[in-house]
Image 1 (cartoon, rainbow, N blue to C red):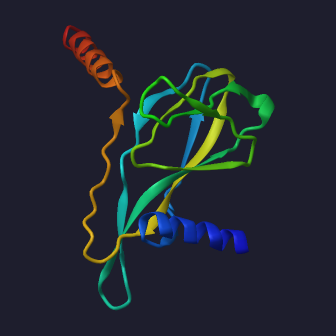
Image 2: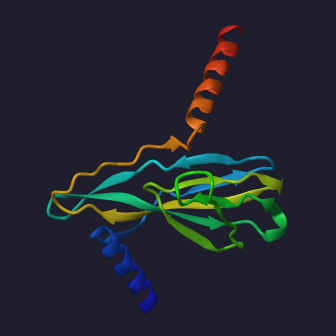
Length: 167
């Protein structure tokens, strides 16, 4: 219990705001063989909560929480890959055992989901909610693909639109 409070105080010290909880809208994702998610920066998320005095608090998701739901024999691959320098020259892969979680900062952290090489994997994903201090403006990060991938995705979208319009 003491370590949970220490972690909460550490989060507060980093951003100067308190932790409000975990976002109630969890996503359960299934990754089949070959499925992956290219390198990207997460989009920010927020919700307003009505207080008993009639005012509202703005809660924003500062971190992502991932939990692996699959047994080790269910899949091979599918690490979460982080690029802490924001470029592809240095990467850190994290593979979670079943039931283990990973919490990472959403803002300015380039990351990807590596392909499932064999089998399938289920993960649960939610956001860590934090209070926005009074008077502070919320500037949410916008989803973006990693360096060089945005242009590639736009090209694929144009090619797909061309194929659909010729049918």
